[in-house]
Amino acid sequence: FQQIVDMEFPRLVYYAEKQQDRKERISRQIIECLAAATSTAYTHRALEDLTEQPSEEIVNIVMVPRVDPRCSAVTQRGKTFIPLFTWGHFKSFLLHCKMMMNPSLPPGREPLLPDQQEFIRESTRETNPDIFLQNHMYRRTIGGDGDGVTIMPFIDAVESIDNPRTIEMFEVLDALVALFTEEVMAGFLNDGCIPQDTADAVNKIVKGITDEDYRSPEQDVLKEAYIRVLQQLSKDYQGRDDVIITFEHCAYESLQKDEAFNTLFPKGSVFHEQLDIDGDVAETIIETPTGPHYKIIYSSHIALGHNNTTHQRVKAVKRTIASMALNNDAGILSDKDFTNEVDIYRSFLMNWFGLDGSENDVRGTFYGARDAAVGVGLCNPHFGRAGTQMTANMIGNGITQQAVIFLRTFLKQDRFNALLTCCGKPTSRDNLSPLDNPLQRVRWDQERRREYYQRNREDRLAYSRQYYQDNREDCLAYSRQYYQDNREDCLAYSRQY
Image (cartoon, rainbow, N blue to C red; front, side, top):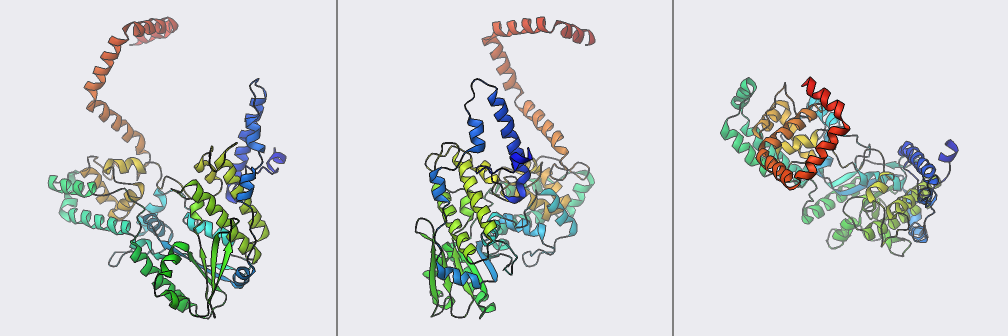
């Protein structure tokens, strides 16, 4: 088996942290091959899935382009890379609270207590050290720290704390805290009751919460933030020929139309372009007279992130490979890492396109293909642990997993219990929600089923009566046959009853 595992299968190239997943996949494929071989209907599909070679189309997509020597020369001088991204989203704020010792909060907010941070850590699923996919893919394109190269912590032009969704959720928090006064909470902790007017006001607030966790700042806000951050970075690293600041092409296009462009990139700056295999610009290098220098890249998140078209993903793969080829030529991305990354993208395309599939006829599953290509703790559709969504649903349809974890963290335990009680689910220190105690999921699910049955009892009985009338002979025949097949069990049950 180990000899088989050590073989090279172009379709089964996994990210380094997921080699165990690759072994399990190979095991399943071998079992399928053995089972298929014993069947007269064996079509070799199971074997092809394991041993398939990339199509000519995929080979052309992952083909390494020629590296521009001028781009390589500037990149080679880089020893410190500073990634500047556009904006941090609401999830980034929660992860910031989870992973940082002293996370930044809006002005006037009390710092998070240890038990609040502990709750975020326990209630959320495993988080990759790179925090999110964009940063993860960026570091893989550069090659990570080492060999004299330092990648600084990423910077968001608009920090997650200033994201519109984060601001909205803090406004909701303040409104709820104002309703849960000391008097209201004293009564709740004493007898579990909430005044009706308070409960009505709480439900009105909850109904106004949307499910839009990923909300972008306004374009003018983004541009102003980009200019401000770039100006500060340019000042901080003035004269540093070994510093390269990277930012995204969408921001670069916006800056080109602003008068600050000539200030950021002074006279004498030289612009170089690295092309992808199609001859389109994959990366722009701005070589300033004294440093720092700039890399303008397309987001590698497009290839593996959400909500992109097939053409956009394929183009992003070509651009990413061009950027990696440049970094490899400059000596900051090793030959081994570069080859492995190209193999991962090739495998991703093979699994995504599927057997006999193509860019115009995708037959595989994107999410299944992506899972093998990214690190552990990235792109998980469930942010919270088991029980999070069940708790969110009891509050309201607009409450996402991220929103409910935010409310539980900042309202703290007792106020959050009061919130659930206002929403029709009495909760207390002795009767916690599944968010705090996942073991409660079974009880909550049973209660939900009972409530549904009671609420729809007459409809269910009417349906049963109508079904019996329409299928009387079949029902009687089934009952007689069941009794004959299980006569002894039926008699034993009757005697016991």
